[in-house]
Every structure is written in C-alpha cells, then in structure tokens.
Image (cartoon, rainbow, N blue to C red; front, side, top):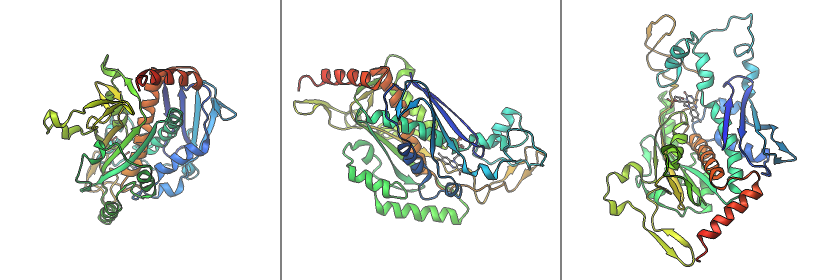
Length: 393
Ligand SMILES: Cc1cc2nc3c(=O)[nH]c(=O)nc-3n(C[C@H](O)[C@H](O)[C@H](O)COP(=O)(O)O)c2cc1C
C-alpha cells in the first residue's frame, strides 16, 4: 500500500526519499516537515554536526499547489556539510589523495560492512550506515503524521531514562492513557524530551559525566499514539500483525537494541489477572479498556487504546576515548581506535525517529483498512466504520 525508499550519504550532497501510496488531496507544508526535522536535531548530548546542519525539506514531486496528487512524493534534504566534503565524497574520480579510514569502531557497521562489501576504506560504509539517514525517515514520518492528523491521530515521544538515571516506576507511562497536552508541551520544552524536570537535570548531569570521561550513553524512549481506532493490522498472518510491524519499524532505528509494547518484559513477571486489560461498554464513551497494559495492541490489532511502544537505545559507538580495534588493511590490532566528531547521547533524537517510524506503520495500516485514492474517499470509509462501531451510543 504505502512504501518509501531513502537514499543519500551522510556527507554527500543530500538525502532523498520517495514515497508511494499517499492518497490525493493531502495538504503538505514544508514548515511542518521542517519542524520535525528540527526536533530530530535537538536534544541534549548532540555533537557538532547538528550545529552545521539545519535540515530543510524540498518537495520535488507529487504535489501541486500544496496538495498531494496521488503520485509519488519526492522529498530532498540538502547536507550543508557537503561543501566541506566535495573532494572526499565526490561521485566521480578525483586527482587528490583522499585518506582512507581503516580503524573499525566497535559497535558500528564499520567492521562487518567492509568485509561484506569488500571495501578497504571504512568511509564507504560509514557514509550510509550513519544515522544521518534517519533525517529522511523523519521527513517521511512527518508526511505520515500530517496524513494521520486528518483523522485525529497524535503521536508523541518522551525519554524515560538515560543510562542508569530513569523513571523507576517503569510501567507508569505505558499504562497511563491520560497524558495531557500540557505534559507534551513540557516534553517539547525539555532538552532531554523528558516530562519530569528533576529527572531531566539528573539526565543532563549524567551525560556531562559521560562526556568528561570520553564515554557515550544510551537510554529508553517511549512513543505513544492516540486516536488510533480498533482494528488496524490483523491476526490472520504473522506479517500483518500490527505488533510485528511496529516492533520491526522501531527496531530498524540505528542503535535500538530492544523494543517492548505496553508492559512488555514486565508482563512476563506478573499473574494474568494483573496484566490483561478489561474492556467495558459505556453508553457515553463506547468501548473502553480499564487499563492499557497491552499498549494498545491485542491479537496483532489495535484495540482502540493508545499505542505505547518503548525502545532501549545502546550507547553510541563513537567514543572520544576509543576502544581497542583492528586496522582492516594491515590486520594490526591497535590499542586505540579513531574518533570522528560525534554525539554523546541520542536518546531524545531517537525518540523523534521513533515517532516517525510509528507514523509510517500506522499510515500504512490505515491505507490498508480505509483505503482510497483521495483523502475525501478515505474520510468516508473511516467515518462509516467509526459510525458503525459507536452506533449503540
Ligand atoms: C539520531 C541518531 C544519531 C546518531 N548519531 C551517532 C553519532 O553521532 N555517532 C555514532 O557513533 N553513532 C550515532 N548513532 C548510532 C549509530 O547510528 C549506531 O550505533 C550504529 O548504526 C550501530 O548501531 P546498530 O548496530 O543498531 O546499527 C546515532 C543514532 C541515532 C538514532
């Protein structure tokens, strides 16, 4: 239904995304996409690159007078840093000698990438394996968010922990379905994208401590989608399950090493009576789950409750005090790898990428369920379905 591809190297001319499957008549504005691109670039703990790049989207196809045409939408984001890399990253041969990168960073794509593709310069791997690519995904996600907004869906993310500093009441957020607009505003104002100001200060302190030691740190973010109707996804095949699609999408974010929906791992430690969400009918509100331990997905389908997914982010692999490694050309084991300008903590930014990935999955599932060639046709399909669900109220 919905598909997209991204292309582009981290220090090449720019990133491109092509989206296919969007219905006609969706209003898209560059400022809205740029707003989300800016959010991905923020967060305490980011490195110097973010000061150079101020990502801006350029629409290249699929729109006329601000509305989608139903044809492929092409998005481009220029890399401002390109002007400093034109020789090193030239697509055509150059006369200059360009120094090769030969020391593989443990924890990154460097080692397996050069072996797999038969390269002798790790630069050939770094450029595409870099999470710079996630800017293109955030742009695609912002388009999907604009689409979902037409139907009343909202997606937010917040940071729950950084290293050992975190919310000890681990199920508080996944279970809660009543985060207010004011709470999300506080998250947007927080440099850690954390809704608890005391915790935020502790997180910043920990990041500073890591930085002073030449270390990096990971953490946990959570993404929550509200306004998702009952019945996206299906139990009928493994790959149609919404849980499969959500976890795969979140797991695809570089440095994400674990994903859970709702109470996730914690639910394995509890008796069934404390895990399963009781559903009731109310003449005022219709179907209501009394709790949301399932994180909005049961049997591979959305159940109408907020979708809550969390991800564990590993510490990023470029350390200012590098680990021992190996030279991929000489095979010499060296006591210290190389350092390239890098972030210290990317958990807040990874959360923004998480919002984009969840938006992409939900947009795809939405097209499957309410499919139509125009927004107007999809609105008719959607409202007829909702009217049928709530017809007893
Ligand atoms: C938004 C974002 C920014 C990142 N920035 C960096 C960075 O500056 N330096 C770095 O070494 N890794 C960075 N990473 C993490 C690497 O991309 C990641 O460690 C690498 O892809 C290997 O992880 P993987 O095994 O999950 O693919 C970033 C990740 C994200 C999500």
